[in-house]
Amino acid sequence: MITAIIFVVPPLCLAIAALTDFLEMTIPNRVSAVLLGSFLLVAPFCGLTLTEFGLHLLASVVVFCVCFALFALNVMGGGDAKLLTAASLWFGFNISLFEFLAFTGYLGGLVTLAIVLMRSNWDKLATLGVRLPQTLMHEKKVPYGIAIGAAGLMAYPDSPLMVAAIASIR
Image 1: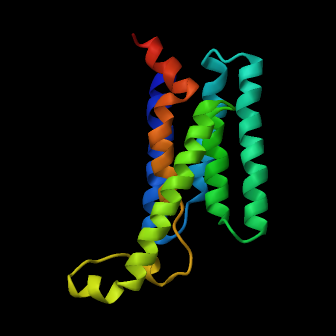
Image 2: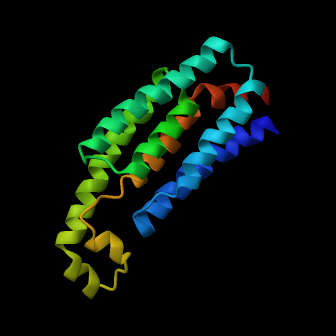
């Protein structure tokens, strides 16, 4: 059961966050809450030592502090900050976290570029029959949840909990 939660919950939450941010330009608080709650539920049964558990918490606290500063500077949205904080809990303070954050940065740049190009060519896309959410075309924000979700899905197989879950089924 614990292995199933590790395999399903984080990827599903990241996919839902990316999809809802694309369609509605919001990331539901429930997604971040499920990521946080499920980690706290699963962690005691995964064989994490107290030090490892502390490193997972440290990763989340560090990411939260940086995201809070970016939110205060109006550079990042609140939903993005909450999602990054909750997702970082699943990675822990190790190389997989830095991989996740690097993928988020690179994919965020690509998403931003794609959104800017789509917005500047909206009339051409409309004449071709391309239908995109109105919020995507008219808001001044960029749905960074797409990048966070995709980066999480790319980096999650290297996370310590996923590696341990895969090893446990062999």
